[in-house]
Amino acid sequence: QHFLSSPSSSSSLIAGRVFGFKTLTASSKFCSRRKSSRSKSSKSKSKTIIVSMASNPSSSSSSSSSKSRKVLDAHLHVWPTPGEYSYQEGKVPPVPGSVEELVEVQAKSGVAGAMIVQPINLLFDHEYLEKAVNRYPGKFVLCALANPSPNVNGEKELEKLLHPAGAFKAVRFNPGLWPEKEKMTNDIGKRMFRMCGDKDAVVGFMCFHGLDKSYEEMCELMTEFPKTRVLIDHFGFARGISDPNWQKVLSLAKFPQVSVKVSAQFRVAAGEKIEWPYESTFEQVKDLVKHFGAERLVWGSDFPFVVNECGYEKASQIVNEIEDLTEEERDLILGGSLEKMFPKSFYSSS
Image 1: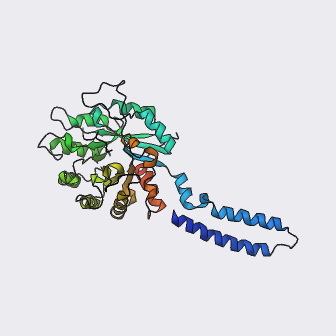
Image 2 (image 1 turned 180 degrees about the vertical axis):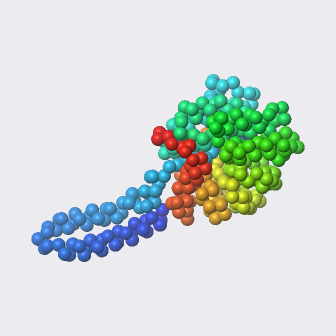
Image 3 (image 1 turned 60 degrees about the horizontal axis):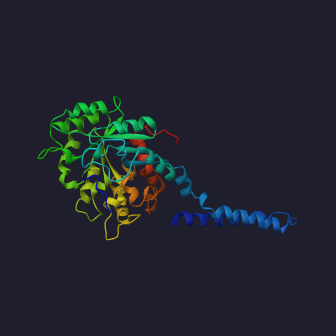
């Protein structure tokens, strides 16, 4: 139920100017060697064309990189409409979020694909996500929800879901689903975590109540099973660089298998005024780049909740608003890192 809660380039310009100055200087020398019989209008036309080319933003490397960038969303959810699915009491989605709506909004926003995380309102019924990935091959990677209940064999269920037997390539560990007084480091937790490493599946930790409450358990699992790759959801749910848990998030960089989702900025933004582009998260991103490197960071929108916040398209532009990031770092955060995490998974051209 916690997951369903939803809170209400100068450098390129300078480079362009420098480039334009050099071009005009060279042009002047070239023109001086022309025969005097050349008409004044021809000279004027030549200069006009050169100036236009120098001042055109599309000639900058920044714009070129942005246009060629393959943007991938590392965190979102989809679910059927209440008319298509019989939800348990209290689990009806608060906002629309069908896979058709996702595909439409991604097409409008220039986002090529995504990792879909199994939503809590569907619990352990993964059929809707399986149908989605079959309907849109090469567009999505699926993240299952680990079932630690003592009444089922969670390890066996997971084995059926995970690739290559199943369609899922990642698993979400939600500490809130473990039985009361049980930890993620209990027997079933360790067996599922180890299996993910054996199957090359990524484990996503969703520490909604604060990273500090699960920090020791996470460190124990990652120390004992270093082969299992890990993703930390939503900045570790730390609200700004002054959050007491922020240093704990940064300390996880010591585990080379850990990456962080730069996602759901509307959830973790700090300050009195929470609005796009959620500038309080900018320093967090810079901190993460410094400690983890951009190759271990992935952007995520938290669709469909983000639709009623800043909107999907604007969410996909947040990283571009952060100054001091190189184009290579933006490329990695906005899709390159996720594509490397799941090679040969995103190949759809639509």
